[in-house]
Length: 258
Image 1 (tube, rainbow, N blue to C red):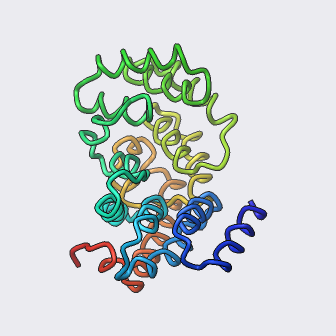
Image 2: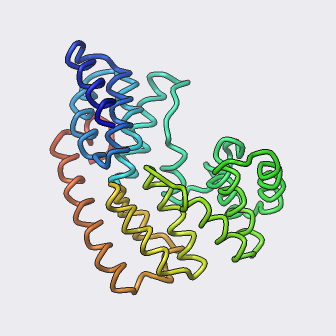
């Protein structure tokens, strides 16, 4: 990671206005648990500027810090400037509980969140058919995610938990994905393991307070002293970033209602 960061800094020293470097560096900062640093660097670049890459680069860090409305707004600003630009807004929608939007996406691209969103929309039969097809073809971690979702929808808790445990055993560097697994385990009443994973999620720089606040899958652990303590840290981090975002002019930059 240090070599990659050094390369990005060198590139930006040579050309401070290199849009793709700013966007890619933001992804690295998120991976390093420094999403707020990416926000502080990119928001000033979007004030009064038509920089689609900067807006796209903000989608993930804003979400990791719990600023879901801002994340969705950054996506809208990016595609308004460049309609075909790719962002990670599907995860923002999922964490907002906007299952209809996620369910409209290709399940092959995002089996887990699209499969669960289809089920939430009452389209379990459709979800299961597509997920089983993916399981047959894909033997990587994505296949295990598909298996976890399939078994969850079918009510096969043990198979679903086993798939999640396989993913966790080799998981690295993706606190958002780990959050999905933690909430999955909590929903299946594996509270202790879920809390262990949530500790790693927050330590990894993912503190999406609104999602955790309203997530019904976390209800089995919500009254746990460990969760209450962790959630207080999440809120503190979220509130601090929220204030910083506003002070930087993020509301104006993303054309959000004050």
